[in-house]
Image (cartoon, rainbow, N blue to C red; front, side):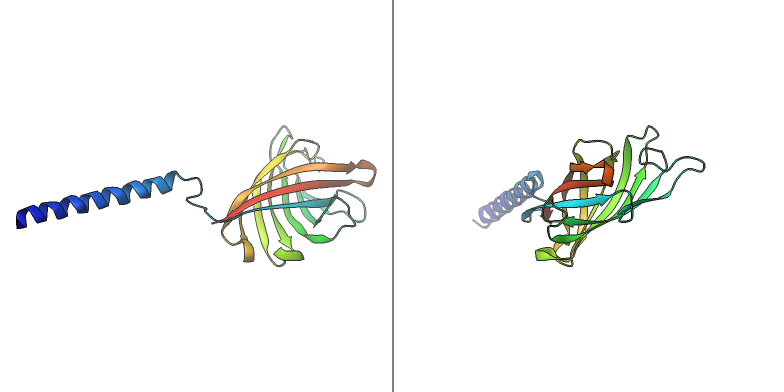
Length: 187
């Protein structure tokens, strides 16, 4: 009888190991496995001035002897723009976007953009989000998507994406409003 009990114990142990393995593999196939936290959606509006006394985007470097324009290969811009709750520049400021815009393609169509959102008011006050990606020239009117790499404070260990779309342009004032739709998931 001891021999039968030992065999039954081995069979039960093997069955448990197979069940653990199957459950473990099922978790890896779940889209939320690596980042199963709560999804958060945020919409803000960047208030961008590309010239004039209140410029928030300024060219700081470029290829020698070449113009410093958004489509000129090698041009580097720095950005420090407020973002607000709504499209109006008079709506409450929620934070600032700071980072770089590098004209990284020889044809002038794309840029490499690493930047941060620093929240200075509201429920995310003191927190940041870090973005990076391949952007389009600022003359482009289509939606641009960036990766959300991580963040600080309330946004520690987040991942996600953000889409950006110019929703208002006033060329005479060098003024553009860009809507940012951010979707993040805490990991």
